[in-house]
Length: 77
Image (cartoon, rainbow, N blue to C red; front, side, top):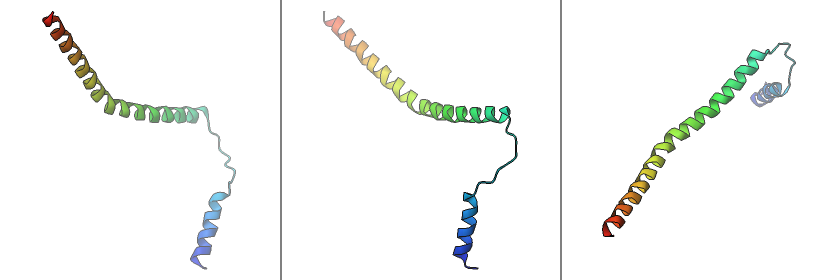
């Protein structure tokens, strides 16, 4: 048999849906919700870990410049 015909026939089998006579209970739904929640929490925490330190450092520099500016203004008066 030609390999391309065999490939087409086998890929066609993936398009056919066969009924599965299985029970999916509420525990499976809870697991899916936990996985989805965990996935988004991991993405959020990774972004937070990457971005929080530079943002805190920039805010601290901005506040230090503001305090130094206020001190020099008070000393000149």
